[in-house]
Image 1: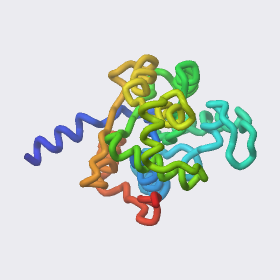
Image 2: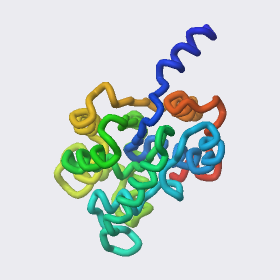
Image 3: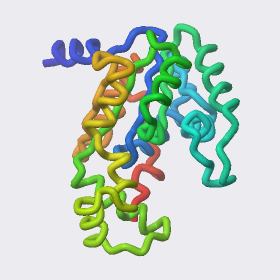
Amino acid sequence: IGILARMESAGRLLPEGTRLVHIGPAKTGTTTLQGAFHGGRDAMSAQGVHYAGRTRQPIMAVLSVLGFTSPTTGEVPSIQKWQSLVGEIEQAGTQRVILSSERLARSPTQTIRTIVNDLGPEQVHIAVTLRPLAKIIPSQWQQSVQAGKDVSFDDYLDAIFNDPDGQHGRAFWSRHRHDQLIARWAEVVGPQNVTVVVVDDRDHDMVLRIFEQLLGLRDGTLVADGDRTNRSM
C-alpha cells in the first residue's frame, strides 16, 4: 500500500516551471488553501515553489485582468497590477508557481486566453476545487445574508432553481455551473492540463496534501490557518 501511495503521489507531480493556476470556485476551500499558501511562503520557497503575489491572494491584479471593479475603490484597478504580477511570475524561472484566486472562476473565454498567453501557454496547468452543491448552496446563501441581502433560505432556493436568470440565480450559477467552468478553461489549455480536486469535508487536510503532491512539496508543508478555515455564520 505504501508503494502504491508513493506512485500515485509521484504521478500527480507537475513539471518544473509549471504555472499552477487555482481558480476556485468560491466555497470550495479556497480560504483554507490561500491561507496555507500565504503562511507557508518560506517553506515553499525553500523547496522551489513560489506563491504569486504578496498577500493571501493577488486580488487587485486579478480584478484588473478581469476588468472588475474593486469593492474598496469602486474602480477597475490598473492593468499594470496584472502586468506586475505576470512579471513576478516570469522571474520565478524554472520554479513551480502557484497562483490562486476564486475570482478567476468568473473569467469569460477571451479573458482566459489572455491569462494563459500572459503566463505561458506551455506552462499553465489549471486546478479546480469542487464541493457538492448541497454544501455550497447554504454557504453561498449565508454570504448573501452577511452582505445585506434580505432573503430567506427557502426564497433563495426558489430563486436559484426556478429563476436562474434572476438576480440570485445569475449570481449563483455564474460561479457554480462547474461543468461549464471546467469546459471553458479546458477549451483553452486542453483537458490534459486541468486537474479537478473534489474536496472531502470529512478530511479537511486532504486538499492540502493534493496540492503538495502537485507542487512537489514535502508532506505537511501546507498547514491550514485555524482562524480562517470556516468564515460562515
